[in-house]
Image 1 (cartoon, one colour):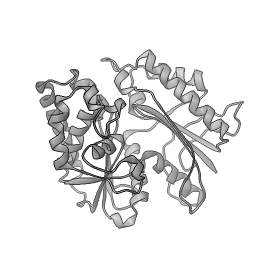
Image 2 (tube, helix red, strand yellow):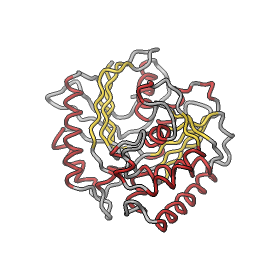
Image 3 (tube, one colour):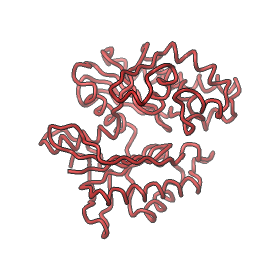
Image 4 (cartoon, helix red, strand yellow):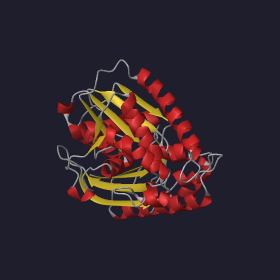
Length: 338
């Protein structure tokens, strides 16, 4: 069975096609990733710019054509907070539909946390024990904790790196007043998170996913991408804290030249570093291990479990892909695991 996952995030549209066989890990078939830069294209009213909508429509159309060419049995297409929370969401969806014949679904923040936790659990295994997950996206921070495949606590808070950069750090480089205001806001939100998690046992292992965490780990000394996904990567809070004032003194162009920092995330990496460091501090963590499996892999695990006859389900009724006359093998998906 071939399954395609199209994940429209705040910075890119990422299509991953895999072959699924019961009892086997997902076998990669094709991956394409196209920049959309939605996070930097949202105005003060929360609307995505026309230019960004066009980039998104073109990226989704290319992804749909690629899925057709590889004869996938199921296409699961969804968008996270950048599109979900946009003031002109209907306009965005209409343009995407016109360009690709695809209807993007949405994942709630809590379900995003749940599915990302599942992906991380399958990567780390049961030996990880009580697992704590952190994921910084463009629009939100997801946190989940538990000792099973399903987290006992799953939270999503509006501490995404793109959102915070847009709302709190308008200058490049930022002024000290705005930086202090941002850090107060982050710590206020995290105090509520800590209260939500106070009944959870201390984690045996804390892991982090997302490009923000991966790039921060590389900045602070973790192995390069070419070392492979099995290389151990760790982000240490003390090292990260030392980088924050340095990042604050740099403009975007200088940050983009730093080790591990991509041009597309140079603008928001400072806000991401603050959220990462303050999250670890609030939760009593000295470090987090970088996990290469995240949301897409969590969805694929649900599909694998369904193939194997497992009762584990991810009840998200808004993952959809329109069946099309020119691609009859694509069908509407009611929910992952259906």
